[in-house]
Length: 151
Image (cartoon, rainbow, N blue to C red):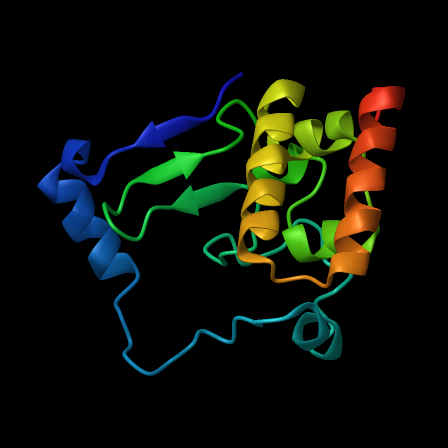
């Protein structure tokens, strides 16, 4: 099932007030949310599945648009403990994935992942943020991926 976005404008005022009362804001308090995978590991939270910090920007269950406040449920048909992975940092530390693996983890299609990858690589090339030797290696990897069709 595709991701579903919930606009804050469509949530009733009563539901917004109830949520604000249940979870009052506490300015300056970070809610003990780790910022890096190392902080997560040092706090003993690294082995927890699913990750208890659904509002963390690295959590794969939902995304919050900072500009509009809308909430995108990446897995609307599943509960948080039913998705394959909950932390993008943990997925990245496990190493590379195929396009199909990334698509399954993010609940997107393989083609959409390929489009995002191509756009990211084009931006890297345009900024020349990496040395030319690495750029040659990157081009070789892209050619290899395209030839094999599975990476």
